[in-house]
Amino acid sequence: MNDDRRVSVVVTGLLRDPELFARSLDQFTSMRQIEEIILSTWEKEASDQSLLLSEYAHRHGLIVAAVPEPVEWSGHLLSQMVSLYVGLGRIKKENYVLKTRTDVFIEPDALANAFTNDLTLNLPQNFEQVRSPFDEKICVWGVELTSPFYIHDLFYFGRHADISRLVNMDIRYDILYEMSKEKIHIRRFLHPFINEFPIFEKFLHVEHVLGNTQEFPNEYRYYVLENLLEDEVYILILALYYRVVGHYYTNEWGPKNVFTWRDVPDQVEYFPGKTFSELLLGDREKKALMIRGDSLFDAISERSYGPCPIGDRFDAAFDYIDSLDDIRKAGLEYDFDAFIERALNIGSSAVDKLKQDFT
Image (cartoon, rainbow, N blue to C red; front, top):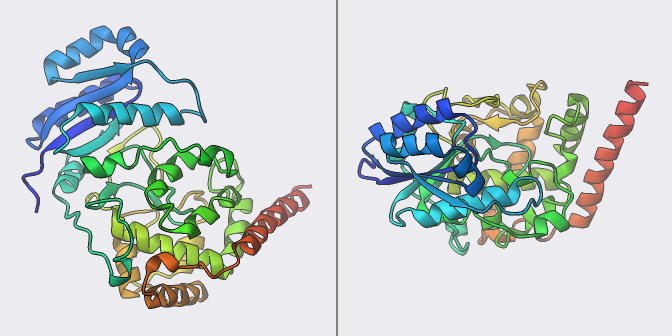
């Protein structure tokens, strides 16, 4: 247990839900670990909401850090990165950080679990040469299983130095890759690893093909996924992703109901003996397959998932990864140009099939 952690809360963005934010503030001020609460927002928002924010400052000790809103760039990307950067700059550097939003309420038991969670990095021997971006694990919610580093970013928790590495304004994501609207999630959580694991950078060229957002019909989404799961390179990319995300992040918040928000995503759950076929293809009503907790990553370490053809392919990929003396070499001998072409062709075939089925 880590009962002595001191926590700073950084709340970013607009005052979207004053009632829910007030409820969160009541909770934050009642928790002994929390030493300070910062709202990082824009000057216009602070001015428009000055009376309410003054009340929050008086009742809860809320500190408002307001700066000019940046120019629009790639949706709300720049605004989100800047607000986090500003908030991190105003808090105690020695503290742990809970980043959240005004329209999210995190359940008390979930926060208590995160604040005392063991975040120690326990890395295998073949990770020794990786330049680790983090000193400890970062606690996140909503790890998606089919698109590497698509992780929900409503809230997360970790050391100040580690959370700071989730701020990136690298323009390559906007000009080199045709990514889906979820790229803001991916670029945040992938960027600390992009230079250590070239295989993940290659995947960004086809990330948009997966169709795991609401813009794509389920028929397209699962046609693509079924075909990609027969591809050795895609399986290897996912296997490496599961290894990396399982070692550097934790998805564990304790209770099943973690937070309140306007649109809480559904999750998939792993239980002992469940197969990869059941996990990845067994619930076709869901677009994003966000796993609950860390049990899947534990099962991967123990190879305790159930047998199936997709699981056999993962077994081969994990055997290969575990045989490497340096995990960063994973996949470097593969022809990624050919994989990119195959993935794009699968996406095109899925579109053609939809046209045939619905005409």
